[in-house]
Length: 328
Image (cartoon, rainbow, N blue to C red; front, side, top):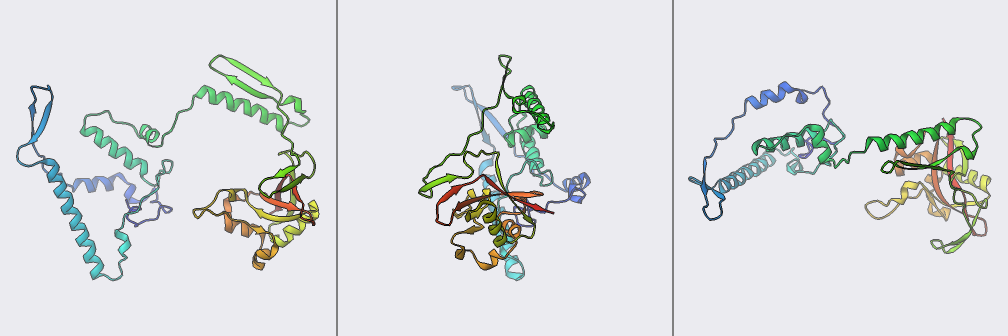
């Protein structure tokens, strides 16, 4: 609720040692609360339908609740208006309710605690079976339980293949693809299919013929560009030219394929070079990547980049994945 009313940022949750998280604080507050008086109703049987209907003795409970709600809302608006008029330092926006993004896996935001408490209070009111916090989390988060036996089989088979990767001298024939069906107790192992090889062809995006260099490369091949963490974008483009013999027409991070809220994507550099500001060309490449895509896209020793390449005559080329490998 503090986030809803703008009193606290969602990125700055209440720490576990705060008094608001202590059971004593909650009990002290509850002890001071006085529940409203109960309203009695009577049940009148309906002989024709065999059902029943609820009538109030004096006033309709629903209409009374609606009146109370309207009265409390008016009191809140009057109080907010008075505070704004009398205290010029108060930001009127604090009285606007903002939606908080639901996050079930963050135990510091009280989301699951609130949902569990609210749902169990309603269950208690209607004499329904109450649910544990874990069960509520599964329902609210739409968690689909995995079959333990299937998960164990898959992770075990993957682990076996990983052990082969780190063992020296293993030939390709030692690695296996697996197809398992626990329903019929069928387990098949086969040699892995060859990776798809890149082919020359017409690119319908750039509307030109594209040549692969080297011919027939696969997704396992990489174009490694080495440099320091402080390597400038201009220096990276020169290193790209020296390594591949081609010009880098455009450079961006794979995450730029996801467009932003305005429907546009971000590019580090685009041809002609004149469209790239000089301060960007003379700035460290890693700093530009962090500014455009966030620090989380950078690895410890390398970062993958998407690109468009062409020779001096403008002919398009397709290369293996470019990896900028830097030293600490």
